[in-house]
Length: 137
Image (cartoon, rainbow, N blue to C red; front, side):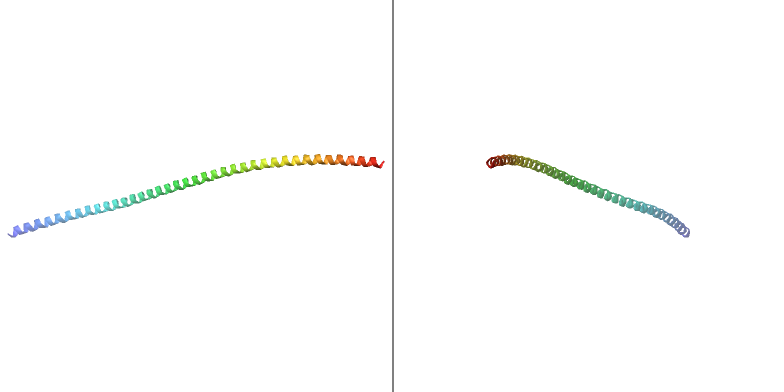
């Protein structure tokens, strides 16, 4: 019985050693799994950050496109306003030119009339002087 007990004890110790060895192997495997899990988590975080960066860049790109479109609209409106102002100024210039031509024509008519009246007065003066000179003789 003592031999049988010793045999069972040795088997139990061997089994215990084998189980301890197996537990150590499992612990090592567990550590490897934990390390791999930590790597996977880090990679997930990195990918998540990359995804957020890409989303932010996309939003930034959309913002830039929107701002560019707004700036283009403002430039188009400004260009149209300038063209409208040019047309208005050209129209006013033409109107002033026509008015100036009309005034020039009126001035020429008045000047011609004044010249004619002056000539008539000079002729009349000459007649008066000629008539007054004849009376004096």
